[in-house]
Length: 144
Image 1 (cartoon, helix red, strand yellow):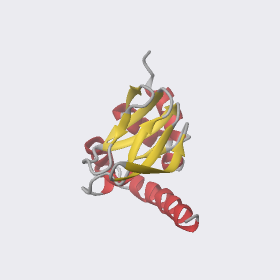
Image 2 (cartoon, one colour):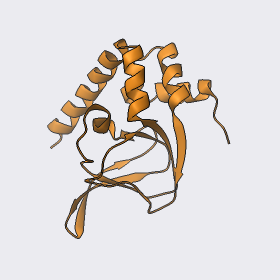
Image 3 (cartoon, helix red, strand yellow):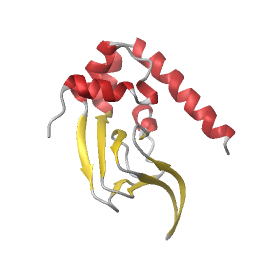
Image 4 (cartoon, one colour):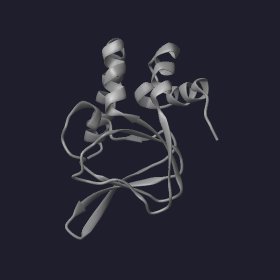
């Protein structure tokens, strides 16, 4: 099943990180976004691996895990419109956590290269998204 640019833009507009963007900006991102499917118990990203982009959950759920040797701690559970991998868009550090599908998952993926190309074309997008990321970071820190 294929998703139109307008449908993808509408979906992206409901994601907190992109909620302040204009429709034209959402459409630009939507043209670069890809849909990926992950089966139950699939590791989507692995702690310590290189980050290549942002993932947004369109359907299903995932656990975010911090791995400690042979054990792990679940630090968050993600569902529809939640996202992960945003730090990999901004730096070259390895993934800070492992994300595992706890259900069949459909995710929208935006690669780092595509994301950075869009920011170069429209730097005002960065200001809007950075405000959302700062809000998210503050919420996480105050909940520790």
